Image 1 (cartoon, helix red, strand yellow):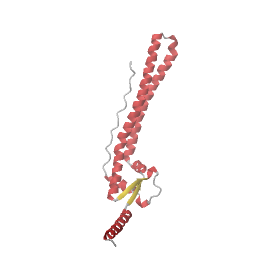
Image 2: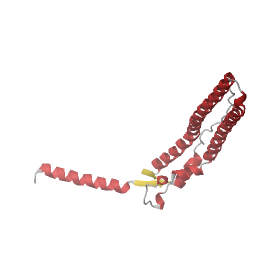
Image 3: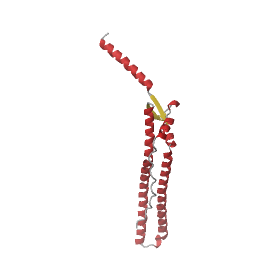
Image 4: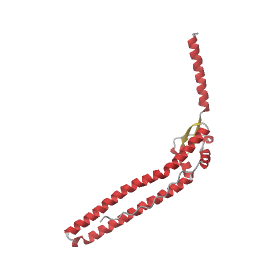
Length: 190
């Protein structure tokens, strides 16, 4: 037999042996990230902070909407007795208020999204860091998230939830985000 063929054959056998050993030693784990996050005390604080922030925005919107409805009703009740210049001024006032309400709604949605990102980002990073540390310390090649419903089968022995919870308990807590000051009411433009 040709020496080149022998070397190639021996190399192929060694490579297959190495790959099969590698495949046997690869560890897979899984975790339900939604369950993990729900178990973190920081989530409850972030949920409450976000809820309070959104409530203050809703209260401001309700105040503005009530003012708008009051002005519209007053205009409708008195428009027959109003002179044209007064009607025009009142219509402009109502239209301006309506535009401010729409602007506030847009700004409030953006503020709520920004606040949510600000509150939850450090918590998600902390959870991810704990999962990565557990994976490295326990030589997991992959850890799948079962909360997405993509894992069809997983052995209970490979569930890393308890290890990650222990790791989180040992890690410093995510930096708390200070509660946002109440939204200042927008005064009507005069």
